[in-house]
Length: 211
Image 1 (cartoon, rainbow, N blue to C red):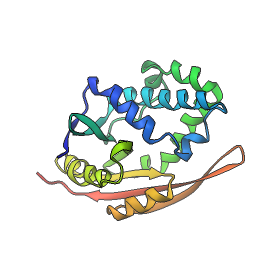
Image 2: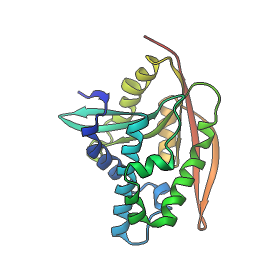
Image 3: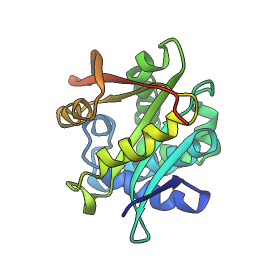
Image 4: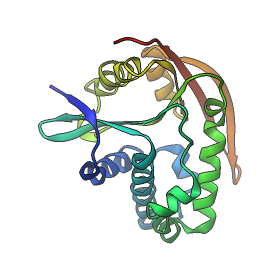
């Protein structure tokens, strides 16, 4: 049985490791990885460690726990609260990103993250944004990704006046996953860097208020 709750400060190290392992080979981050494998691993963990801390301070991190271990994570940006700024990253240990990835990769990554999600953030109305959704590598294939959406994220939003839940993905596999879970694909764009191209798809789901 999976128990869902909001993450606490003591959970953040475990959350960062889960996210780093889950997104290790994700094409978006590979566009900005240093060339050496060792540096790639350091940069990926630094990205997740810093962003996990910064996100926790301003928004909501939901976790699924099974057998006393975190098995799923959802980072949820709430409506009416500004997105994470450069200062937020700095105050959350952003210097680690610079050491691990270098100035060019770090600022390029942050700029591309803003560009990729801008369609969702600029929509009118009460907008929730699913910044990240991940399942522990040891538990993938068990339906835990769908479960955290239906049993945690949607009820969480329903109890807080509802709204439009949005997200982006850069993976064909994830496109199928989100469509299967009731999301509508409403925008497509191509991200480009150093001769590389990457698809970027935006999704949304209307969620009504429910006590």
